[in-house]
Image (tube, rainbow, N blue to C red; front, top):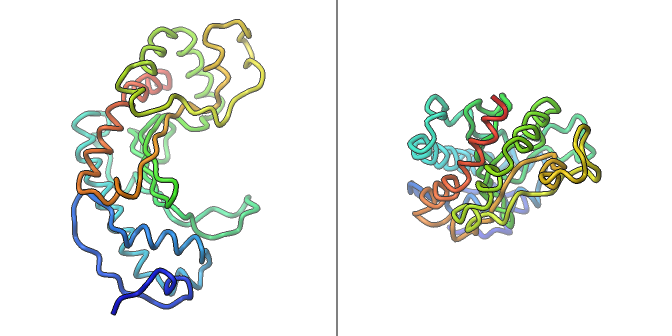
Length: 242
């Protein structure tokens, strides 16, 4: 028997057959995330837990494949394990006005410190309508932010070379400016040649990918290509943090 997406939305337990295909995400996982967005409650989630378990395993296997390849270009990740990369789907709603219990994405971070230590790293995000790859250092603590700003101020030429590199620019539109100061940070002048970067509160670069990319058997190769392009930025940020 075949089930359509609307069956997911009325709470009927489903049984999808996930194909054991390496280096790609199945359409069933994308459909699950779309349905979860429409039914973000514990009752529906519990009813369709088998679908979540299948999607979780598929994503975990994909992350493991990516990490295995990524270690060959970034030796700092040699001791990192997939379980230290994948984020939980449960949301922390204690201090949020949004009380929906689940994230509507699957995400993984690849950094030498794992998820619990503040270092720059790579990021892989699956969310219908908003799939993306990239990396950097997102909303660092005041201490780490100070170190990054100092490194950029001292080595602006190197930083400009990294984000101006053809390989980087071919994939990433530039650094995200989603969070930045309206005035120069303390100890920096408005006329500082690096001021546009020094005002940033996050240092990340992101690139969108499509459903077709996720469904492709070449997904891992595409992810690695994106991560190779951003590795110099990751190295620069971690040099500052270390």
